[in-house]
Length: 305
Image 1 (cartoon, rainbow, N blue to C red):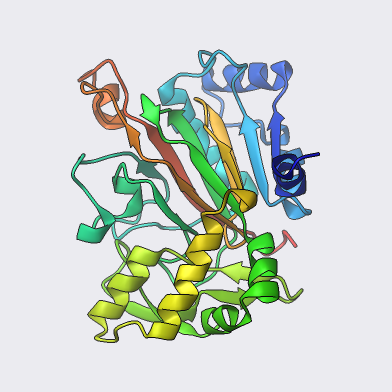
Image 2: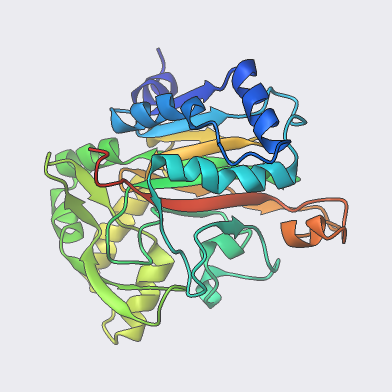
């Protein structure tokens, strides 16, 4: 078994729903009933509660034609709520965010949020915009990119093991507070370490370098040499292929991760010149959809432990 196979076995799992389950979803979508067939996804709830930190759920049967863009859009919050409480992700109160390129020249370094750009790299966790912890990142592929846009998934537990074994000074620095901005959610700063630990002693990550660098500038606290060294080491490790699995999501794929233990990113991508947003597509303003993911932040319910 090679390194990539070992990594996939340890934290990356791909599963498919059955033809019967697809039929149940189709029946629900074509009826007026509000009785969503939750039981289809209960086995995946149990998987993510156990030792599975990354699951890709294939909704479609492989040809990408079973569910329409609008149907995937409708299903996402219903599926997400099975895993827990959906959290607000911006200052407009939205709980479902469309991830697509708003402007080919847009950049995080100019104040845009990651999900609004076509930029790649910046391996990160999503739990940087709010100080309160939450549990799962839910990402659904409504439409893949014309070119690029490969998903990058990083095993945070193995990265932590390497930090502890080979870079203890960097690890010690990452366990100290940094300044963060609540970009897109509130005009506030807060302090938190990049690495903390849960009750079982497992590492929990909070990382998105451009946001953190911007927050330190706003706070008038330039990053110290020791901090820069530690972040450089972390970025070097998370960008190393030995800790990564790459997977290009297909239409109707759902990616569910334990966000604080699985860092993620993507390769840069390009949409077709004529591609439009999901909103414009549904209004009939174009026939080609941009690379569109729908993102949910999920906190486990009080009775889920």
